[in-house]
Image (cartoon, rainbow, N blue to C red; front, side, top):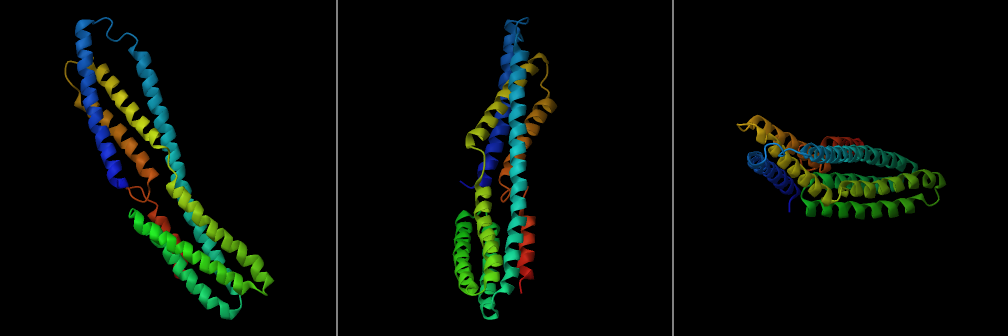
Length: 256
């Protein structure tokens, strides 16, 4: 299923579930208060404290991890841009007759790398662009090794730069696919629903429903979960790393 659709369905389902469970909790609390006014809330504070504390920990750790991975993905764009730029500049160490072919391969390679991320969330198209960039890596490597024969200085400087340029591709791909296990998101949703049930039960003492409290609780918690999910998938949501791609695009424009 499409990632955007999955996130939207999850968040909308969570919001609706929280409202329903708040109402169910309130009705359960009203019934319990009618049956046992004195003991209806006995021991409830300890349960509420434990469940809400767990919710706070889950949100904190999930948000912290998502923000850290978001920053890592942005930093990797900068590192790849620097690696490609360095390797391209060191092509000047090669014999003049070998440079035009390699520079043309570099132009195509950077275009392919940009396409990998521009085509997301179209996964098949992004995989095709990734395969093309990997094929170009092989061509660049073979042509560079051939051109470095008899040029020890070029070999010492260009080969490590090419290694770094190629390695960062794998690092970025792994970073793009690195997310917490789905059970973590399921746990986050289940605990949020449990908190809604307890919140509704706690509001049973009021004669009238407080829409401000009910909606406010559901909206704030749902938005928090959405932001966490949005940070986890920065190529498809509202919080994006696309602007950082301009750094790599600038490297492409500087290639002459």
